Image (cartoon, rainbow over all chains, first blue to last red; front, top):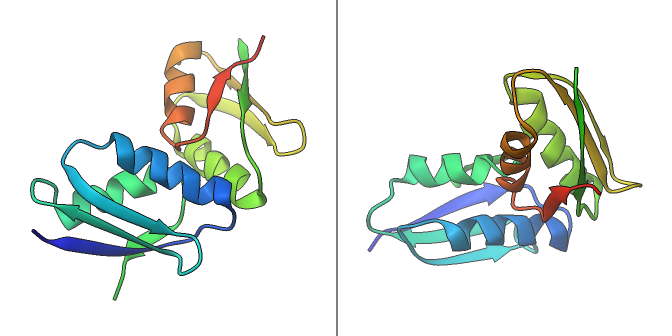
Length: 68
Length: 68
């Protein structure tokens, strides 16, 4: 199953908590990890595309992009 | 025009910035204010209901409710 990685600007635990809350409610996400320390979010999903997940993360209002 | 007030948990400027970004992109919002200090968000809108705006704020992953 593919794992997608994103760079997401998060400055406090409230920020990472918000991204965590959104991903935990997102149908099709198998596993995910949100790291405030590395500013990275990884998401494992079979049914959602890299772009679809990115758009959901961006809905939080955080600056986010697919990691290089 | 009605002004709606919400209690939104925001712990840093990244949090309030995320809510600001979402509201600035939301069609139908005439004016809004996001206060990290008071944890209040006010939104002036004719075309959106109190509940519709609440749902948009909640999409950020922040704990939010209509203020008493």
